[in-house]
Amino acid sequence: MAPNDHNRADTQTYLHRIGRTGRFGRVGVSISLMSGQRDYRMLRQIEDYFGVKMQGLDPTDWDEVEKRLKTVLKSTRAQASYRPEAKDVDM
Image (tube, rainbow, N blue to C red; front, side, top):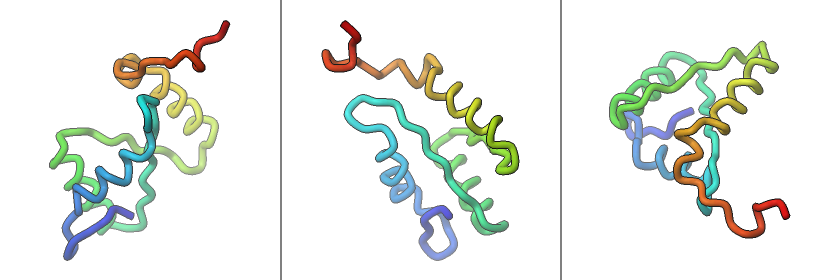
């Protein structure tokens, strides 16, 4: 469920929470679970506020969920800001 402030999406709290998925220059993925129309409306408010389009996942097809997560983690956009440290490089 998206954090809320009087039935409006609390965009700053949401940003803080998902920001914890990628730390120290690493790529991360955030998955938001929804439970009904209220959550759906709040996630749409978050999309509008940040100008992003979230992707839906089919919770009954875990193979597809895994495939899409791997695609996101390997995407050029996700890797653009990643700078491997010495310990991350295979020698």
